[in-house]
Amino acid sequence: MTEDARRAAPPARRKINPTLKFALELGPLAAFFIAYSKLGIYIATGALMACVVASLIVSYAMLRRIPIMPLVTAVIVVIFGSLTLFFHNETLIKIKPTALYLLFALALFGGLALNKPLLPVLFDAAFKITPEGWRKLTYRWAFFFLALAILNEIVWRTQSTDFWVNFKTFGVLPLTILYGLAQAPLIMRYESKDEAETDAM
Image (tube, rainbow, N blue to C red; front, side, top):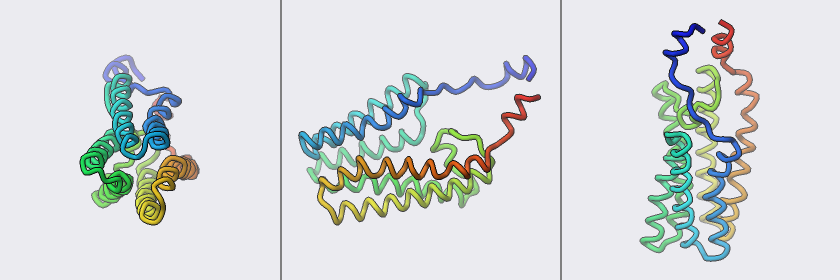
């Protein structure tokens, strides 16, 4: 790459250390679980809202931008959390995950229908794969989010609040991590070579 091309290239995006990134994502959930076990669902809801907003502030301070997925999650949490506290109705915070997962699923399916896969936006372009790879990966994650929405509805409607909190804390995250790891073969199969070819020029 020539010197002029290097100057014309956009500045590299800032990135958060993976460990810190995981802590920012896990922190609100951990705060919710701890607060619930000691103080109940309504204090836990307030703790979740506060920690989600705090994690956004930290992310912005380090990245000078806010990735779309944490932003959408925070908006949904604040809306449903506020309604939960205002109406003093724990059902509202229980359907929050359903609303969030359905929103992600509908956005992904809608993007595919318009031939504009949105998964690279949701994942903040974490992978370098071909357009076909993104399309297939988008289908998979859209169906996964839809399955999570259905699963959340089944759990909160048929189980106790204690069970739902444990499912939300210790069930959804491991399921999501395992599902993400299961997509590794597809990501490797459709890995984009453009970046490597550019560096070799």
